[in-house]
Length: 311
Image 1 (cartoon, helix red, strand yellow):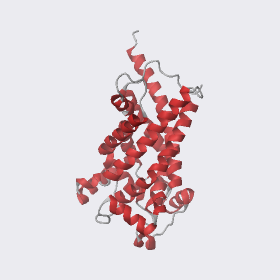
Image 2 (cartoon, helix red, strand yellow):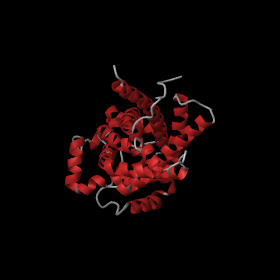
Image 3 (tube, one colour):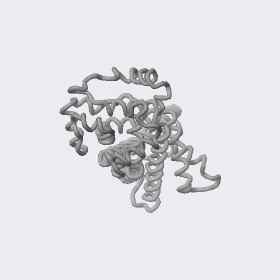
Image 4 (cartoon, one colour):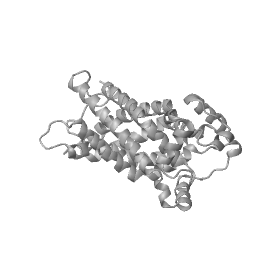
């Protein structure tokens, strides 16, 4: 057996909330360069002027990472990391940490198992709640990841994370910090359903049919399946979200306008720009996050039980 033993007492909501945020931050630290590469690939070719003036063309995941390291330095792979960690502590804590509680809330009393519809509804609910709270951090993260430094583009628009929040609010209004909320809610409702429901169902079936025990191999297989499903269904919305949040004021009238221009100018395949880094990132992120999350829940419960036990 790998890792800590399952706790005899089910983890509390507070333990899940804290554990999800911590696990997501750890997963972000490991996979952030892949996320940055995905953003660069998604915004490449955003308009004719950018295509004509672009210094560095990105080709594939490894090519994007190597180009960024060569032209902007290794630190460019972690542009927006602070905002990314702020996002995960507020975002993942809600969408993942509260998923089981919301699922139980929607499950009819007396029912032993939650239906697929109930799980999907719970995933949509926590995903929408999380976006509403964490959207400003996502906007700042995408702006940092999309910005190119080095060469003739060495001027930095933001001196730091807090300066980015202030600058966006000053130049675009407070609403600018919630730019792209609608496509982000759509995207994260889909991602949350794909991730949480797929992980939930695969893990449940593996345990019900005694194929695996509730430990690392089971968590790994379930998380990998969740990452693949999430990437397939969420990539089109993710591309629109990234383009819209990174756009200049007035470039797109709405997320729908962004989607239509994307199709007419670059074709439907543009919806899957950056698919490989998206899958590598989401697959790796889900594996690291869920495995860490399961272990953190057990560790935090052991700490809680130790503190509450009489001496």
